[in-house]
Length: 170
Ligand code: GLN
Image (cartoon, rainbow, N blue to C red):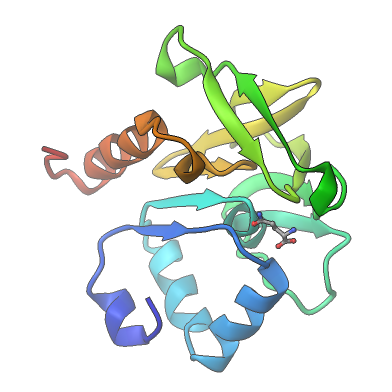
């Protein structure tokens, strides 16, 4: 998704991992910031992971002062809060909305959720910090669900997005 016209053509959006400062800059360069803000304000469902979660947050700590925080997810995140690239790691986390089997979470220079406000439902934690939140039609993850074969979080997102959009996920 690189143009406002492409944004118009989708019902829901995945904001993937990457580099949140670069993604902020590119959203501005491609004239996507304002159209995306409008879609988010209109309730477009999102799945945001890692850098995408940073973009969706209410507050970004250790970010660039000019980087975008759309303020949709009621969380305060610290960029690279789990350490540098070599401190990337995997862990099994329990996700409350997914049933008993844990989810293998891959953290790559992940943001640390320092605080989740009342609007964000914490659905998984690692240690004492949230690592996954649900908020209305939005899911926000500190880790990379696409790095495993486990599609349960993507499915959960589609189900919640479909419910929000009142269409069938089938
Ligand atoms: N550290 C990156 C950032 O600040 C996020 C890393 C990732 O998306 N895996 O944007």
